[in-house]
Image (cartoon, rainbow, N blue to C red; front, side, top):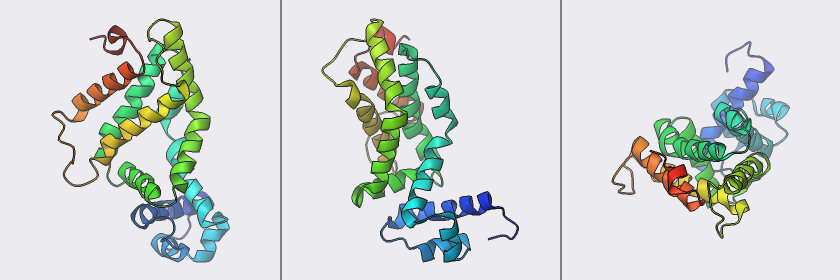
Length: 215
Protein backbone atom coordinates (compact mmCIF):
# COMPACT_ATOMS: atom_id res chain seq x y z
CA UNK A 1 0.00 0.00 0.00
CA UNK A 2 1.29 3.48 -0.82
CA UNK A 3 2.85 5.31 2.15
CA UNK A 4 1.11 8.31 3.67
CA UNK A 5 -2.47 7.04 3.42
CA UNK A 6 -4.66 8.22 6.26
CA UNK A 7 -6.73 5.93 8.46
CA UNK A 8 -9.88 6.17 6.32
CA UNK A 9 -7.93 5.53 3.11
CA UNK A 10 -6.27 2.45 4.63
CA UNK A 11 -9.61 1.13 5.83
CA UNK A 12 -11.18 1.63 2.38
CA UNK A 13 -8.20 -0.03 0.69
CA UNK A 14 -8.68 -3.12 2.86
CA UNK A 15 -12.38 -3.22 1.99
CA UNK A 16 -11.54 -2.86 -1.72
CA UNK A 17 -9.11 -5.77 -1.48
CA UNK A 18 -11.49 -7.99 0.49
CA UNK A 19 -14.53 -7.59 -1.79
CA UNK A 20 -13.25 -9.53 -4.83
CA UNK A 21 -11.74 -12.23 -2.61
CA UNK A 22 -15.02 -12.77 -0.75
CA UNK A 23 -16.91 -12.72 -4.07
CA UNK A 24 -14.61 -15.28 -5.70
CA UNK A 25 -13.81 -17.60 -2.80
CA UNK A 26 -16.55 -17.00 -0.25
CA UNK A 27 -16.32 -15.89 3.37
CA UNK A 28 -15.10 -19.16 4.90
CA UNK A 29 -12.39 -19.82 2.31
CA UNK A 30 -10.95 -16.30 2.36
CA UNK A 31 -8.27 -15.71 4.98
CA UNK A 32 -7.17 -12.44 6.53
CA UNK A 33 -3.67 -13.30 5.33
CA UNK A 34 -4.92 -13.26 1.72
CA UNK A 35 -6.77 -9.99 2.30
CA UNK A 36 -3.64 -8.44 3.80
CA UNK A 37 -1.55 -9.53 0.81
CA UNK A 38 -4.10 -8.12 -1.65
CA UNK A 39 -4.24 -4.83 0.23
CA UNK A 40 -0.45 -4.75 0.67
CA UNK A 41 -0.72 -4.40 4.45
CA UNK A 42 0.06 -6.60 7.43
CA UNK A 43 -2.55 -8.84 9.02
CA UNK A 44 -2.06 -6.87 12.21
CA UNK A 45 -3.13 -3.68 10.43
CA UNK A 46 -6.38 -5.31 9.32
CA UNK A 47 -7.26 -6.00 12.95
CA UNK A 48 -6.48 -2.40 13.86
CA UNK A 49 -9.33 -1.37 11.57
CA UNK A 50 -11.68 -4.35 11.95
CA UNK A 51 -12.39 -6.45 15.04
CA UNK A 52 -12.79 -9.61 12.97
CA UNK A 53 -13.25 -10.93 9.45
CA UNK A 54 -17.00 -10.76 10.06
CA UNK A 55 -16.64 -7.07 10.94
CA UNK A 56 -14.95 -6.54 7.58
CA UNK A 57 -17.85 -8.38 5.93
CA UNK A 58 -20.29 -5.91 7.50
CA UNK A 59 -18.15 -2.95 6.42
CA UNK A 60 -18.47 -4.07 2.79
CA UNK A 61 -22.23 -4.21 3.22
CA UNK A 62 -22.39 -0.76 4.81
CA UNK A 63 -20.43 0.86 2.03
CA UNK A 64 -22.51 -0.86 -0.65
CA UNK A 65 -25.83 0.30 0.77
CA UNK A 66 -25.43 3.34 2.97
CA UNK A 67 -23.43 5.41 0.49
CA UNK A 68 -25.84 4.89 -2.44
CA UNK A 69 -27.14 8.34 -3.54
CA UNK A 70 -30.15 6.97 -5.45
CA UNK A 71 -31.30 5.11 -2.35
CA UNK A 72 -30.97 8.24 -0.24
CA UNK A 73 -33.06 10.15 -2.79
CA UNK A 74 -35.82 7.54 -2.76
CA UNK A 75 -35.96 7.35 1.03
CA UNK A 76 -36.38 11.13 1.21
CA UNK A 77 -39.56 11.03 -0.91
CA UNK A 78 -43.00 11.09 0.77
CA UNK A 79 -45.13 7.91 0.57
CA UNK A 80 -47.13 8.01 -2.66
CA UNK A 81 -48.02 6.08 -5.79
CA UNK A 82 -45.30 7.93 -7.69
CA UNK A 83 -42.75 7.05 -5.01
CA UNK A 84 -43.73 3.38 -5.27
CA UNK A 85 -43.27 3.49 -9.04
CA UNK A 86 -39.89 5.19 -8.63
CA UNK A 87 -38.81 2.54 -6.12
CA UNK A 88 -39.67 -0.29 -8.50
CA UNK A 89 -38.13 1.39 -11.54
CA UNK A 90 -34.93 2.10 -9.61
CA UNK A 91 -34.62 -1.46 -8.28
CA UNK A 92 -35.20 -2.99 -11.71
CA UNK A 93 -32.86 -0.54 -13.46
CA UNK A 94 -30.15 -1.25 -10.90
CA UNK A 95 -30.21 -5.00 -11.55
CA UNK A 96 -31.14 -5.05 -15.23
CA UNK A 97 -28.93 -2.17 -16.40
CA UNK A 98 -26.40 -0.97 -13.81
CA UNK A 99 -25.09 -4.27 -12.44
CA UNK A 100 -24.35 -5.98 -15.80
CA UNK A 101 -22.66 -2.79 -17.03
CA UNK A 102 -20.20 -2.64 -14.12
CA UNK A 103 -18.58 -6.10 -13.85
CA UNK A 104 -15.67 -4.85 -11.74
CA UNK A 105 -17.85 -3.14 -9.14
CA UNK A 106 -21.58 -3.77 -8.88
CA UNK A 107 -21.33 -7.21 -10.45
CA UNK A 108 -18.66 -8.11 -7.90
CA UNK A 109 -21.09 -7.19 -5.12
CA UNK A 110 -23.78 -9.25 -6.80
CA UNK A 111 -21.41 -12.22 -7.01
CA UNK A 112 -20.76 -11.84 -3.30
CA UNK A 113 -24.50 -12.06 -2.67
CA UNK A 114 -24.87 -15.19 -4.81
CA UNK A 115 -21.81 -16.74 -3.16
CA UNK A 116 -23.41 -16.12 0.21
CA UNK A 117 -26.52 -18.07 -0.85
CA UNK A 118 -24.26 -21.03 -1.64
CA UNK A 119 -22.56 -20.88 1.75
CA UNK A 120 -24.14 -20.08 5.13
CA UNK A 121 -26.14 -17.12 3.82
CA UNK A 122 -24.69 -14.75 6.41
CA UNK A 123 -23.86 -11.89 4.05
CA UNK A 124 -27.26 -12.16 2.32
CA UNK A 125 -28.90 -12.28 5.76
CA UNK A 126 -27.12 -9.06 6.73
CA UNK A 127 -28.23 -7.40 3.49
CA UNK A 128 -31.87 -8.38 3.91
CA UNK A 129 -31.84 -7.37 7.57
CA UNK A 130 -30.58 -3.92 6.56
CA UNK A 131 -33.17 -3.65 3.80
CA UNK A 132 -35.95 -4.70 6.18
CA UNK A 133 -34.94 -1.99 8.62
CA UNK A 134 -34.15 0.90 6.28
CA UNK A 135 -36.04 0.38 3.00
CA UNK A 136 -39.05 -1.87 3.56
CA UNK A 137 -41.01 0.59 5.78
CA UNK A 138 -40.85 3.34 3.12
CA UNK A 139 -41.71 0.93 0.30
CA UNK A 140 -44.67 -0.55 2.18
CA UNK A 141 -45.93 2.94 3.12
CA UNK A 142 -46.01 3.92 -0.56
CA UNK A 143 -47.82 0.70 -1.49
CA UNK A 144 -50.47 1.38 1.15
CA UNK A 145 -50.80 4.96 -0.08
CA UNK A 146 -51.27 3.76 -3.68
CA UNK A 147 -54.12 1.51 -2.51
CA UNK A 148 -55.65 4.29 -0.41
CA UNK A 149 -55.51 6.67 -3.39
CA UNK A 150 -57.27 4.17 -5.65
CA UNK A 151 -54.24 3.75 -7.91
CA UNK A 152 -53.85 0.11 -6.87
CA UNK A 153 -56.19 -2.63 -5.75
CA UNK A 154 -55.68 -4.65 -2.59
CA UNK A 155 -54.27 -8.05 -3.52
CA UNK A 156 -53.74 -11.20 -1.46
CA UNK A 157 -50.02 -10.38 -1.33
CA UNK A 158 -49.00 -9.38 2.22
CA UNK A 159 -47.43 -5.88 2.05
CA UNK A 160 -44.45 -7.20 3.99
CA UNK A 161 -43.64 -9.66 1.18
CA UNK A 162 -43.94 -7.17 -1.68
CA UNK A 163 -40.45 -5.69 -1.57
CA UNK A 164 -38.81 -9.11 -1.32
CA UNK A 165 -40.60 -10.35 -4.43
CA UNK A 166 -39.61 -7.19 -6.29
CA UNK A 167 -35.97 -7.65 -5.29
CA UNK A 168 -35.92 -11.36 -6.07
CA UNK A 169 -37.34 -10.94 -9.56
CA UNK A 170 -35.15 -7.94 -10.35
CA UNK A 171 -31.96 -9.52 -9.00
CA UNK A 172 -32.42 -12.50 -11.33
CA UNK A 173 -32.13 -10.11 -14.26
CA UNK A 174 -28.55 -9.52 -13.14
CA UNK A 175 -27.89 -13.14 -12.19
CA UNK A 176 -28.65 -14.47 -15.68
CA UNK A 177 -26.14 -11.93 -17.02
CA UNK A 178 -23.28 -13.16 -14.83
CA UNK A 179 -21.83 -15.52 -17.49
CA UNK A 180 -20.18 -13.97 -20.53
CA UNK A 181 -23.24 -14.85 -22.59
CA UNK A 182 -26.69 -14.19 -21.04
CA UNK A 183 -28.55 -17.37 -20.17
CA UNK A 184 -32.24 -16.48 -20.38
CA UNK A 185 -33.39 -16.03 -24.02
CA UNK A 186 -35.34 -12.83 -23.48
CA UNK A 187 -36.79 -11.34 -26.67
CA UNK A 188 -35.71 -7.88 -25.51
CA UNK A 189 -32.81 -6.49 -23.51
CA UNK A 190 -31.50 -3.36 -21.86
CA UNK A 191 -33.96 -0.53 -21.17
CA UNK A 192 -36.80 -2.29 -23.00
CA UNK A 193 -36.49 -5.35 -20.77
CA UNK A 194 -36.25 -3.14 -17.69
CA UNK A 195 -39.46 -1.34 -18.70
CA UNK A 196 -41.28 -4.64 -19.24
CA UNK A 197 -40.11 -6.03 -15.90
CA UNK A 198 -41.14 -2.82 -14.14
CA UNK A 199 -44.64 -2.97 -15.63
CA UNK A 200 -44.92 -6.67 -14.77
CA UNK A 201 -44.01 -5.96 -11.14
CA UNK A 202 -46.26 -2.93 -10.77
CA UNK A 203 -49.24 -4.83 -12.12
CA UNK A 204 -48.42 -7.66 -9.73
CA UNK A 205 -48.46 -5.18 -6.86
CA UNK A 206 -52.01 -4.27 -7.86
CA UNK A 207 -51.50 -1.02 -9.76
CA UNK A 208 -54.06 -0.30 -12.44
CA UNK A 209 -52.97 -0.45 -16.08
CA UNK A 210 -53.32 3.31 -16.51
CA UNK A 211 -51.20 4.02 -13.42
CA UNK A 212 -48.53 1.40 -14.01
CA UNK A 213 -48.16 2.13 -17.72
CA UNK A 214 -49.42 5.67 -18.44
CA UNK A 215 -47.95 5.72 -21.97
